[in-house]
Length: 113
Length: 112
Image 1 (cartoon, each protein chain N blue to C red):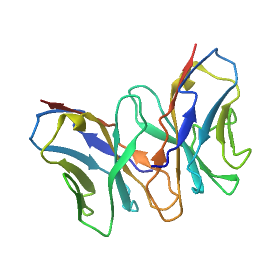
Image 2 (cartoon, helix red, strand yellow):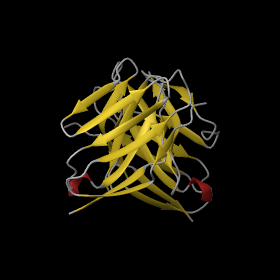
Image 3 (cartoon, chains in turn red, blue):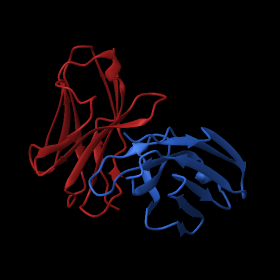
Image 4 (cartoon, one colour):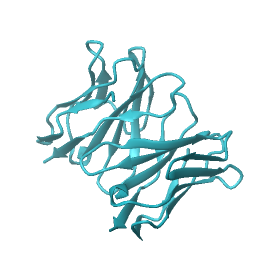
């Protein structure tokens, strides 16, 4: 069964450093998403992406965050200057038009120290 | 915006018993309600979903019911097995290419 692949599974970074979280969506999927889950809280929407541009972003997704699909296969989330409160599990997801349900990756646990 | 509430937060059942997890939503424009199962160390996996034009959907031992008037939907698992132990999330969205609003999750423990 096709999978969404996320790397790394765990990343530890110092406050103020830049991190890039990587995702390889399912090959024929066209819609891409990032969600995050802070420990003990709900999974929350960050951004959706289609046709090489952001379709929607949440209030969380401020100027410190960016996404891109650099090579037609990878979908990356960059946090320019990490804060302690960015520590969370980050999930990538993808789907195709008309298929409302997403396929999620297994997540990247980001720890900012 | 949408607010999805999920209950209970933990649920412990004996193997073979049924389990029911309930969610409510606030946005009457929501029309798609998926349920995800998350096992330790893995991402959420879609197990069943329902669209607002349907009141009930069943897939083997799992079923989902939707009451649009009351704005609530429920997951039913019958004949539970130890491998059903996981965290279950409900969600609501406005459909195609729309963000999900998740519930807070239910940790289901099925005791052998």
